[in-house]
Length: 489
Image (cartoon, rainbow, N blue to C red; front, side, top):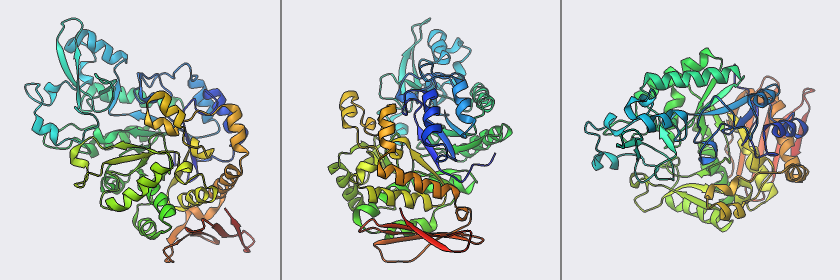
């Protein structure tokens, strides 16, 4: 199954109308010809936290969202992309609950990573921990075994709670590999076409390293799971937030990767009215990527853009976004902070709000994204030109909720009729339908305040011209008749 070079949607199962059945109805009513590339449904599984990213199992759908029947119904019209959190599973899963009851006598014990698997005496050494890329203060949590009362420390990379809700899996265990196989076989049965490997950078735990993207072990695992997926007709999309060179190592191995650099460069270009860095980047980046501007987390800054952007320039962009209502996610690990103290991991905001709710600037950003080589993804809030949901941040205390507004059917209908959304849908249709996007890409040399990108295939040619001062965005293209045409985005 080849991934289609067309636009995809990213959405939670309950964010467009409340559940999967309604999502399917909304897609078919308003966006039937828009998301020809497919639908990325963020985790629809039973979960104990992190809005689906602490799954109990992948064999079931959370009943409040619907069922596998609903996933297959969406799949009849749209290719479906789902997540597999290869690094962890929920504390509330039957697997870990059995371990909490029986300890090392549990049939599932080898799924997990008690510290004795890392340090011979089971006691963490601070010197080793200091080298690790941490996502919480300590990469382990303490639990009590029910039958014995024994206190055990288990590896937990993620999670705000103490102890964590997200329990790391031992990918070296045959038991874990069998579990992944069961999950992937089920995905195949449900006609899932693409699986995103979430948090894959953290799966290798090895002393003396950062425990992040440890080579060659991570490539060995990728080879194993790629072979498994291929045998089931599934494409894989590994998700890695790190220095861009790490991403490129996956690209060199032939894997799809995410372009986590593009969102910042597009935003910076439109804020400072210069496309110099963006143009340079577009010339050197790998083409086999999924592109995005917005997502359920935030706009990546560090460590993704280390060595590409100076702290001074990044601060300007961050400060502008803060003035426009954004909030920030910060780096936990001292090793990954800048020597000058700059520690912004992600800018949390709606992309529309980051561009000051300026329709022309927002459409310019999307046009640049769609012309960049790769598979474009549009997040549901961005699709509807949603603004920062500050009220939800205040209510939940979770900064990421700023860009996770759940739209009612009435809100969707109102948003779809907004001029900015109508213009965006016209742009998506052009990106899906024009043949040149399967051809040769070029970035022209032009003045710093402009961006010019083009595609050419056989007799088809199209070009994008963006004025970063006025946000005027024009697309010219050759029609089948050979006549040239153009339109203002």
